[in-house]
Amino acid sequence: MPEVQAPKIAAIAEPKRAVPAAGSDVPRHVAIIMDGNGRWAAARGLPRVEGHRRGVEALRKTVRAAGDMGIACLTLFSFSSENWQRPASEVRDLMGLLRRFIRNDLAELHGNNVRVRVIGERVDLDPGIRRLLEEAEDLTRANDGLVLMVAFNYGGRDEIARAVRRIAADVASGALKPEAVTEALIGQHLDAPDLADPDLIIRTSGEQRLSNFLLWQSAYSELVFTPVYWPDFDRVTLEQAVEEYRRRERRFGGLAAKTGS
Ligand code: FPP
Image 1 (spheres, protein in one colour):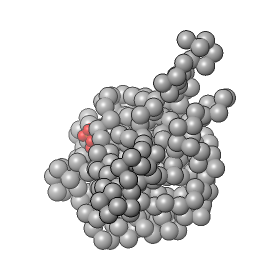
Image 2 (cartoon, rainbow, N blue to C red):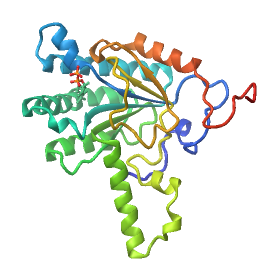
Image 3 (tube, rainbow, N blue to C red):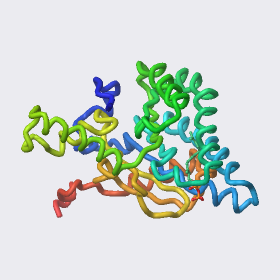
Image 4 (cartoon, rainbow, N blue to C red):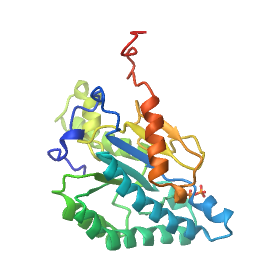
């Protein structure tokens, strides 16, 4: 079920289509496709799991940097609904890293006023992992600092399909008229309906595609691709991506603000 709650963070609780206030040059919501762990490891003759381990270190650095930079929400693509196709041993490694990350880092995240949220399908997850994710969300629910949104067993098409299924059930029961199905209503049935769409989506490793990440929410996101492999990503590369974002002109389908052209 989606978590429908009063928004905790005023900075990102505005209507989803809201254009950032003039002069606010720090993106409120940054989402990252953390790619290149395997290639980072292969380039060093190391097993893939070592790339993922170093990826967790990069994740820690990035969370701290995002908080310091005044980013309100950081969404990290940690395990996609397609990642189950990887060898069982790699899936086990990734699940183990998530477990360890929550066990080792939750207290520090909580101490730093970070609110952890999770998007993705939880039904298929191991009950132990599900409990850990819930524990992280429950412990940090009242925090009003950075929102760390972990996309785990997440797929954009799956998220939209789950939303549509719930809406279809309401239409079938007569609770909802077909003409009430609007973009806003679909948005309200997504996994984190209260959060603003990402202003900036970064993908590391040189690949230039979304790979089923935040398909609905990315309609007007700025995309920045960096050749850096995820384990090498840090505060400096995050700042560079934000710099690139600042140079972009966001028009949301309208006209340029200054020239009207
Ligand atoms: C892509 O690298 C990355 C992932 C599949 C997942 C990202 C995972 C982490 C950063 C570590 C795990 C952290 C948590 C909290 C679960 P890739 O393996 O696709 O790299 P490649 O394209 O070079 O093979």
